[in-house]
Image 1 (cartoon, rainbow, N blue to C red):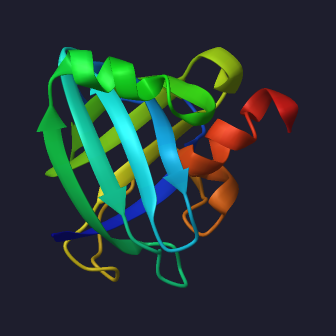
Image 2: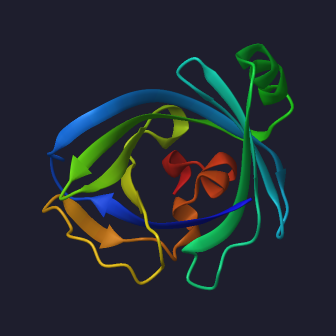
Length: 155
């Protein structure tokens, strides 16, 4: 089991950098408990099931376990998800030797665009591109789990 350390930001302009990959993602949540979240995701042609533990006070760190599963099984599990499915296109962009994941949401969350960066430690420094806006790491409304229950179109 790994610790996931990430920070999340709003986008304030056209994002630039070297696009390393593009993924079409659909995901849903089988469980949204306070101590454990269970997510099912299809990213392009690969299925995953992920279990996430509770977040730290700053919402930057949490334990995570993930396993690749057949897409057919992921599709079946999506039928059991609570709330609405979260759909997005993810652009992995390299900037100053770091990779930012820019998520452009679709469906009920259309209009929302956020960038995440995974770090080695919560206090690791990194250069922010000019297109990075307000940090929303500690605002739980920007978590995908929250968006599945409270879509951006309803804010």
